[in-house]
Structure formats: structure tokens, C-alpha cells
Image (tube, rainbow, N blue to C red; front, side, top):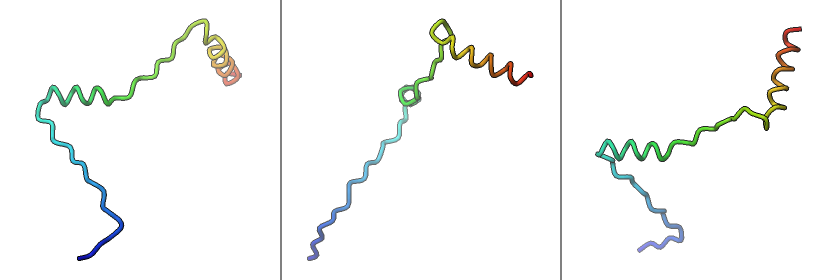
Length: 59
């Protein structure tokens, strides 16, 4: 009988999803949330920086 100190870790297998609706729901849950940039009074400095960059490119 051999004894070893190192053990192999367990392998986890996913069962296939047969229900198309459940598959779509799972994919929706795993999607990263979209990044939303709002334009308004709080980002006026960003809009000014873009405008200045465009003006310097035109010159």
C-alpha cells in the first residue's frame, strides 16, 4: 500500500442545461453590467476637454 501526502483536488463538472429558457436566463445573469456615462452639469469639465482637444486638432 502506498501513502502519499499530496491529494488530488476534486473535479467539478457542470451538468448540461437542456432547457433553452434557463440557458438564456443563466447567460443574462452572467453578462457584465454595461457602463453608463451620463452627460450633464457634473461632467462639464470632460465636455470642455473634448472640445479643446478638437479645437487644437483643427488648428
